[in-house]
Picture 1 (cartoon, rainbow, N blue to C red):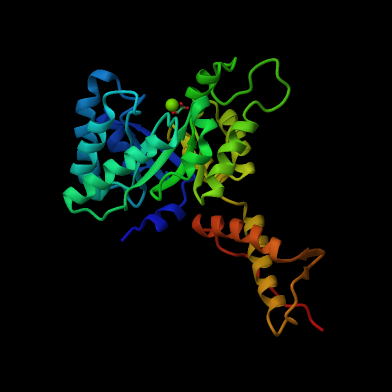
Picture 2: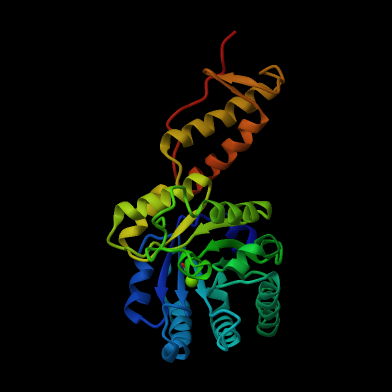
Length: 322
Ligand code: GLV
Ligand code: MG
């Protein structure tokens, strides 16, 4: 059975956006190799078709073959009149086949609490396991970023904090129309503060941090550059809007083979040096590198991401002789 904790640890390198009102995309997405899908009732779904899309999503969740992907539905935000019906219809009718609800444009912690309470009521009414369905919170306004610490602390259902660059750029009046690209006239990285602030809040509460969409779907180099930026900071994954972006995201958000091997060697070397056989020391040399408890913590992160991505070790630790 999938527990919330197990769900949190699952890789989300590529999170595929699927418009909930498009039967062809709902079908096709099932066979694509993304780690996650999110079936969208919000901005990819026109107001007139939202009601129908709820039922199409229920049908796709209950009767589709999602092949182990994390299954998420994005509902409309709490400032609209659609949110409660989105949640009630989808969770009552497809709750056991759903892993998370994504809440867009989260402005404060109370909005997450409201969703948490509604989910609990539905789970109790329907006899579903209480607390199994997780929440993904999108930060895409200035207000949301101001409150991101409290948002990240607001519910044990939270699994991810997701940056929504398109709405965010509109919210703060950033002078660029190309989502994720730097605005002209500013020499530094205009996204650094936003990405770091979200990442800090996520990590402080053991949540995954996910980067949002890159809309120029034919620009593979642009996607790669933007994805590498958030991957380098420590983000766990990124949205993908097109099948062509999936393989790139899966690769960019997995550690390289060299880094993975190195991390496993550090873990082995640390285990050895702290053991009686290794002299019960707190630090040791691995080649020319001094390693200690802090190195072990960094290695745990990279090794964990590599194992989750299915990487295999290509080197073996040899304890130093003499
Ligand atoms: C995603 O929802 C975005 O606004 O970028
Ligand atoms: Mg948005």
